[in-house]
Image (cartoon, rainbow, N blue to C red; front, side, top):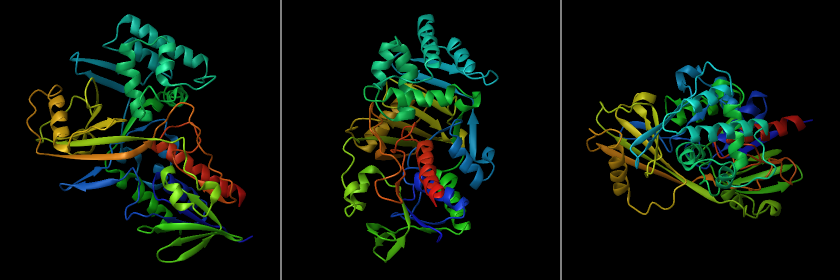
Length: 433
């Protein structure tokens, strides 16, 4: 049997994870990416002589597949990632008070989370009792619902207080699912809690990249593929796909290439442009909508420093603030993340001024920023809605697969979700070849 020739269309995280998996098995793989830069929605950008990211991402200790690929292709993880035990610190701009939860890493899971809730600051005894009761309920029910529902309805049914929802569950939902509570899938949220809180204590650790995401992910993963004999074709757009008796012909501006297997690793909104000749895939995914993420970089004088590398904010435009001086040595640079927001309806300068005013509540001595940079990804993630039907990796066409964080799986639109999907698509080829 001839060795399969495999094309991966899309050089984002899912496509690169598929390519690394195939390359590790010595398969003949070609990655085709329309942009000059790999990484998709997880890539570095250069501004003011610094390497930033198109969005501030975090990893979790439970992201086992992502960490495995990083370990395979990267320098030692302690050099590339800053690992912190779970510590949530959220500032309420309206109440001028902090909610704080620290999970003692020396306790096994899930006792470390229970201990963290008991000792949490900014919650009443009633709040803590409600949170503990919910954690016990999730454990007893194996973090599984009989029927999916929105997270807002689920939390109300489980008697969670407004203080708990605002200070704990909603920030976690926005960080993990990038979807408002009123739409978010409760089951997908429980999946993330199950993997983060219920297995090993370090699964709940927060991991922050010490460098930009291009240097962390796409460059070493692409280098690994090339070193294993694979091919990376950037700045190359696949115009269409034609099925033949021998596989699939990919048509680009430069040439036509025949492959026995194809993994399409682009967003669902991009599929219709690729699959006009494949009628079973030509219809867009009607059930999918999308959520934006805006990251506002604020450069202050080098002495500016937050009390923690990462802080949450509620009753504010800002939701999460990252101190890139503590994370990656970019002193005085704060990255403010606004997830799943409606149209901000103000220009970038006014948005930066709003963010600055809110940050002065955290750092009263804060002077005007030296510069700011606003980065908005309008389709940062699919909206992880309750009861959303997501497609499987295997399509109705032989040897044609889908990969992306939107495919069927336990995870929302995260780096780990994309990695798992890419690995699954690659393994389907390897198992059948």
